[in-house]
Length: 418
Image 1 (spheres, rainbow, N blue to C red):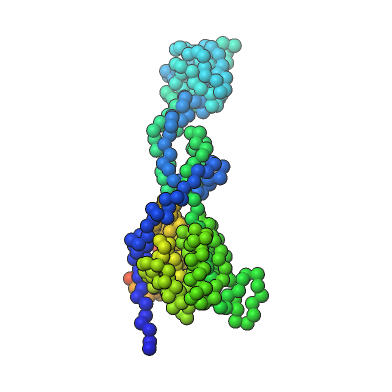
Image 2: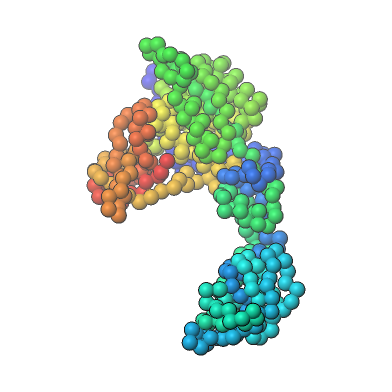
């Protein structure tokens, strides 16, 4: 008997199905840790960060020169300077013990605290010292020129960083600036990888005729790390129901993995094994079998024990594209971010040739991006989805939408960068 074809779902339907059936709170409720500031680069905040005080907290000079009242310089020029009395010098890191009055100035270095009565700094280049106690100011400056005011960087009570934000070097700098050195962040989610196939051997092995090395475990593991997760390598499993079922149960219970990827789990001949296993693991079981994406149509999505399980095609290109569309944003979602499969960085380029696509699916085409003049161009890299070398040569992907039958040469396209 001929088996019916699986019903494909759109990428949007895949995301909706995951959100509707996954209890995210249960997965992430114990997924927070406090980490030292030195080790949090690219980690995701699990708390809102609020400025506890003004920063810098005092009026601070940004130049070497003289702290003055700006009004004393109004109208000053090279030919008609203002004359000011020097009443002292401000020591770095110390609070001035004096105030200045009209007609007075004090020496100050970059970073020094302005004394009471001063509201600007005259750069030393625009002054001339007449004697030990007098300078000429040779230009007019405005109030607060060459000064960072006490709350100009941050105001007390201001929200600096929001929960779910991925930390960059400058964010770590602002945390140090407010004295916050122990930060609540989300633990990196563990994503287990299981390779299936009787013909697959470890990468260090020597393949016999009919065998191939395991590419996907290492490729997907690197993708997981790049996305902010922790790959859990479960090795290669033969296409047998009992073995695959045992391996998935182990990784959920022993490794405490938040999600599982089965590489090759959707390919013809073994997908029946994967489908049977995923429907035996618990409710709701298989939610999606087939997505309207090329390459990657036979993808499977299931949820068991409140853990998402993806059956990815065995072809490396298909596996990477499906990962990028669904697993990468899931890793972000598990750390308080948004689940948006269009979250990749993109640049605009001009298509270098005509491209044909079938309506009713999203077509992801590998492209090489190059620059000529002031324009970026996207050159399609054609090849079967089993050829990992096409991904090596590619800079990213372009999407031809569900109801578009192709793109013409010269079309403006958005390149989804790797």
